[in-house]
Image (cartoon, rainbow, N blue to C red; front, side, top):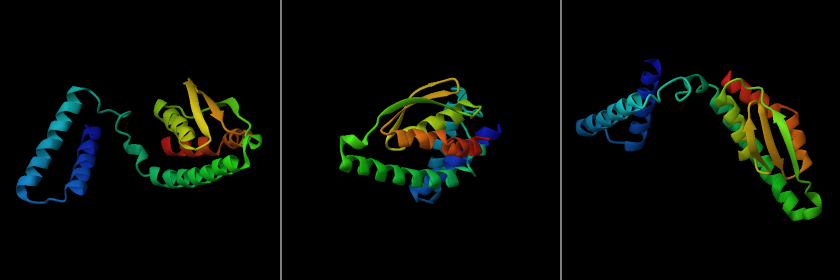
Length: 156
């Protein structure tokens, strides 16, 4: 029930921010649409602790800002490799261990790797993530465990 309430509050805030209409008719239509979505979500049995990640909400903004900084630095690195040419590229394929316990945590980690330019998650099996990187530097950055630690702080 708690997750349904959080979903209701999230959908309400999202609807109000996007609609910008506050007349009685529009508010009642918005409420009706939100209740319909809640009913459908309940019937589909998709409102649970895995789909409604309420516990992540307070920690996500700091992680997003850190990830944004990493994305900018990785973009600069990729541009540098493009300018320097093929001799600066040392493609590598490696496997890194994910310390996250939940599937959601592992997926957030794998997607964060893929979002960072120069690296892509090829496979995720159990707690092992296979990563292809543009250069050995990208692999070394992953092996330091900084991204893994930050994702673990968000999901735990």
